[in-house]
Length: 189
Image (cartoon, rainbow, N blue to C red; front, side):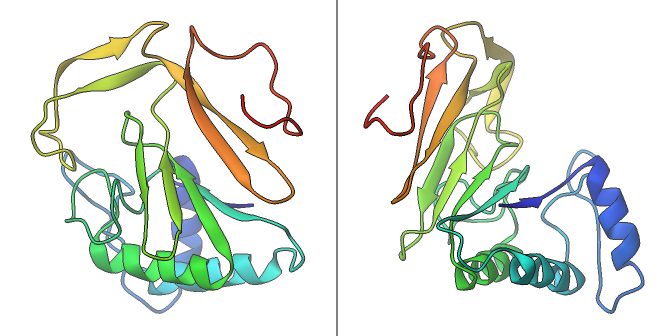
């Protein structure tokens, strides 16, 4: 598994990358944010190294990050919650070439996700505590939600993931519907 870490751990990575060739810019609406406005030449080298050092005989290669590459579709517009198109295309191409088929992430405070044309899946899991209340307008940007949070056992929840020999399955459960047991060897939930 490869973790693309943001927030506090990004500071350490970015400090190491500053000496490498390539331009980096942190920013985004709402102040400093390890957002998708990174220009990824230096990060791509670190990613290539991480992918190359992973076990070559792994059944599944998965990426975990805070910020999703895309919310619904690989070719969607840029927004606050996704990586910019160029960065997204480069990173998704890099991880797919290394055999990654699933990318788990958060940041959106809602459940979402989608597939690209080759079946690469981006899975976005809402926060366990509260979800943003969607406005129906600008789902990729900061205007995509209205005041107030969706919180409580019928909104808050978690995603269970079954890693099986042949596949990885996942499903979101609200706190009032989380199963008491979860056996990866058994079909279904």
